[in-house]
Length: 367
Ligand code: F0G
Image (cartoon, rainbow, N blue to C red):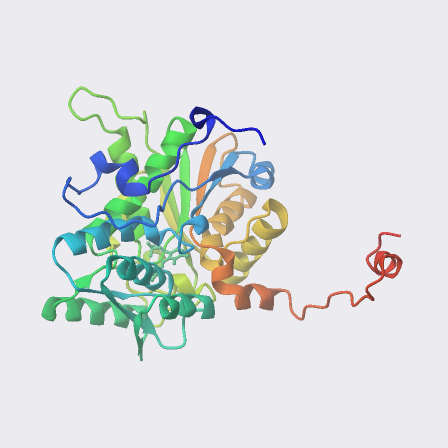
């Protein structure tokens, strides 16, 4: 067998702290807790490009170790928690933060306490919290209630809060914007993503600003900043309504949030970038999820398709200029919520065939 010389092999990705150490709030003595998150693909999207007349790329965050973008922030938040002597972490979650917090916490030897809205997170996400040894509280309330509770626990008891109100989380998450610029050579014209608790849109904007800024006389890696386009679910769209929503409801359970913590930062991201935050219906979100699966070959969870739904909607209603370079973040893997995806297709009816090639070929339309 031919031996591939080491120099021609791709370099092993070391995780976001080691890759972006000089831009993160860590020191040489910070213990690095990593699952080698980040370094995710920026995938050209030919079907979306054709539909929109733009050059569309997907930032595929579902390939992170626990299946969502949360790992980028969690590596920093948990590393800092260890550095500061924490023995337990707490978070509120619609499912992805808890999966990530549990995985990173156990890796660091910390106890993960997760507060989940009762009955409102998907089976696979709950399973992740369970297998990573999460200490799980099913809260009678929604995500916003869970977050209030998590804050109160962290204020009063010896436990580190690792929701995105923890600045270390956003610092880690901004690295996704760095990777986009590193891959494209500059910032895109528009960056599109789903919005729930609004940490991610805030973190991307921090990242883009930082990369375009010049520290003193040294120009940053980017010459410009994108417009930030965020999309919520219509039943959970506080930014569109201009204030909190008391009973948020959407099939996209990851973004079923009525009172986003990073309100001011997200408004700033929207306005400073000349962008927008709008809402898509559950039907539009599920249709976009299905089109991503069926056209681009990429299976994402419902919330993750909100940005794609928004992009398609703006294009189809004549509100998207062609010829632009666009990046859409798809935030979590499709396997995170298989029930919603399967339900969209109704009853699954495979061809039942005998174990015989000619009979199978006939049934499958090959002969
Ligand atoms: N997409 C997915 C798959 C998510 O899990 C989330 C948030 C978002 C988008 C929205 O990101 O909150 O930064 O605006 N999930 C959180 C959680 C709330 O608990 O897992 P955001």
